[in-house]
Amino acid sequence: MSNYKISTKCVQEGYKPGNGEPRVLPLYQSTTFKYDSSEHLGDLFDLKAGGHMYTRISNPTTEYVEEKINALEGGVGAMMTSSGQAAVFISVMNLCKAGDNFLSSISIYGGTINLMTAEFARMGVEVRYFNQNAPIEEIEALIDENTKLVYGETIANPALDVFDIEKFADLAHKHNIPLCIDNTFATPYLCRPFEFGADIVVHSTTKYMDGHASQVGGVIVDSGKFNYANGKFPEFTVPNESYHGVVFAEQFGDAAFIVKARTLLMRDFGMSPAPFNAYLVNTGLETLALRMERHCSNAMKVASYLESRTDKIARVSYPGLASDPRNDLAKKYIRNENGEFIGTSGVVSFEIKGGREAAVRFMDSLKLAALVVHVADSRTSVLHPASTTHRQLSDEQLVRAGISSGLIRFSVGIENADDIIADIEQALQNA
Ligand SMILES: *Cc1c(COP(=O)(O)O)cnc(C)c1O
Image (cartoon, rainbow, N blue to C red; front, side, top):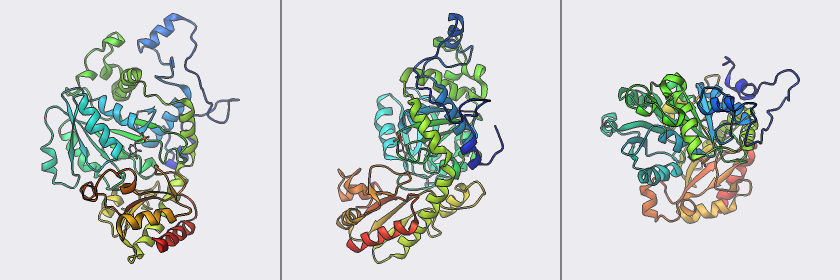
């Protein structure tokens, strides 16, 4: 892997054409691949030879994009998935079986909470949530001999809490289990969790990596630094019968986690991305550095403006602001490729005075910012959890979930910041 800076890797890593080959990543929209001998194909099935056989398991277009993302995060291997949900599912299930449990911060994406609370429980895998600001002894007490990983989000969606990666990497490693980080909002441009001790990184590529809201996808990256042969993870050290006795930790060494994820879980669950979606992510990634710089500078301006409107705004939540209680943690973990603190992505949330009614009037008055169930793409968008994603909750239940009835999640795009602020200003007049 090269020593280029992140913005160069965004453009140059992954597909590198040879003499006379296409300049742009080719789209191999093919389910399968042709071989000249059954012996060669048999070797592929036994994992004795490398190569693509079926797009459910791997595909050349997708593989080039995986190489780029792996280079951006600094891992030993990556695997793209059909969604961010699938990336989380496979990461946890690659380590846990019925009877096991894992720890997760409670400050994470709502869809992940649904997956962990309801679906994993149905499979006999128990999630134990912790408050990431609780005393470490209290969190450590949740770990027992069947605990298989610790999970958190670099910048949580939607609470925007910043995860203390080093602290939780130390806790996990003390108990011989890996730390898995969802790095979706930070992107590898603003944070590379492996540098702080994380062992597995997942992303919803649906968000900033794609950046244009044109596909749903996910990715898992393996740091290659965790020893899965430490006795706690027998599936890595016992011969696997579906591959004629392959022992993952022996045959694949540092890359055992990601190879097992692909050759067992992807093979069997089939949460594979369409090659065209991987192609779209690749195009998005080429401008990731530029876009994140702009998302951050715009969001800093929008957050500062909102903070100045104390007449209409009760509270602004953006860890990029010096006044935000998470600003110190953000400054430790969230920095651009030159080591500068430029903000914490484009997502800002704020609470409008006047509760649910004022929030709805404000949202309906916006002209540039669009009402969509999405965050983290190039267009400014907005969501009012109390009237949409969480509308089934009463005001009292919302408060318990950390979402007040006037809370608005604002995803600042890459338009001119003056236009975004002018749009907010006119909508506040109407609210
Ligand atoms: C959106 C999101 C997910 C889920 O990803 P999908 O691509 O929508 O399946 C997971 N984690 C975070 C932080 C997200 O924002």
